[in-house]
Length: 163
Image (cartoon, rainbow, N blue to C red; front, side):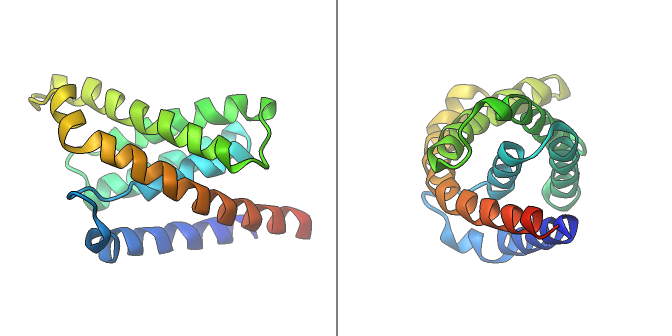
């Protein structure tokens, strides 16, 4: 049942990401709700499930929106693995945890992205990304993480308690 719930959330997220969120941009920055979903799921689940979810969302994002296939899949998979590796040592009922992990994950996402696309010939710098996008997306993602984390936690808890 949990798999069906997560699949519906992912599908709904991709629909919102491609239709509604472009109209909700702030300074031409759209929130990365895929990243927030992965963070929220990885806080609540084990390494295997989280890593598979990170890879699945990443490869779907690469296929639908990306220019380089596999880039987001690798980064999201790493984020999910790292967070789920330490999730046993954190207090999961506090939404501030999602806020902090979302900030760290957004930074990690951009740093890894830069490190991986630079050898492919894409010429960009961290200063350029920071100036144009990163700061706004950090704030946007972290604020949204409160709401998404509460929603995901409730759904996962219901599916876990039901079975």
